[in-house]
Image 1 (cartoon, helix red, strand yellow):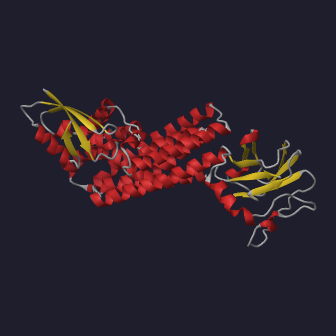
Image 2: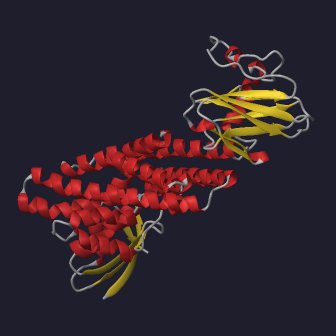
Image 3: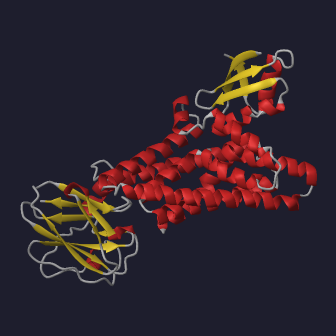
Length: 70
Length: 355
């Protein structure tokens, strides 16, 4: 398991954090997402064997946000 | 009644869009399974209505609870003024947050703990019939910024009934946007979303500004928009000292026809104000300094908050009759003193200038 923090751009309310948290269900290999609108960041715990960092960034982009490694 | 109507309009405009941004995803994910299973929009109306009715019921009950909580404190004029200022600052902060002015404004909205949102989100995947009802109730735990402001207003109302009415009106107003967007499963384009968010933000800035203004008026602050505008108008503002014989205030309105109003009392040491549904007349009342005075407040079929009359600096607070007259004794005031008065909501204000 790997833990990675991302800076998230374009979040507009706490609902965005909820939406990003949904990656736990929609992206196989993602075990836990703790997203914060206040801090504009997202901490992801994921299985490197199942999903890559690039795929996570792409999934975030598909939700309408931009993610970059912290 | 005015506040309840304002709450409804706030829900219909700012509240609907703001809450939809925070809570809409829950409803959407709850409906997703049904859309896949049934492929029929007609069947969607029931779970959406269940969600909205549950949300309405829970928020109304919570409004009553907040109002009851507020009633425990018997808020003084100063506390109410402080609360109005806080609500105003909170709304302005939220408006600036939505306009992305600075990241610091993000802290003007409450962020529920991740564990709580995770629990609610997982419930939304449940396909049982009661799920929308449960989700509607759980939205209480993830309020949007505008809803949080309404919570504060419900506390400030100091009445379980008024608190419940405020929350009921607000959530009812927010419901059409929820229903339409969820039923048609439409998403506003990114462009229109940005436009709406900006409109909501501007609305919040305006309403927040009004709340700050009310707080300042209620506190008798020398700095407020009302005081500034009165200062600018003063050269042609009629003087309200009541000479003998007694005048009719209706005749004091500049550039307008005389109103059919009751005659105000007059005489030595007596000053008078006519209480209207939309303010006090005259807004600037001149009075002799260094002598005790009796202030007569005259009402005639008055049903607005102007009946709840306060002079913060003298700790005077009185509820006037719908129609009638109330006399208030004012201690001697030094020359040059400007004594602010207002309604209990700070919406309508004026001042007595001692000369």
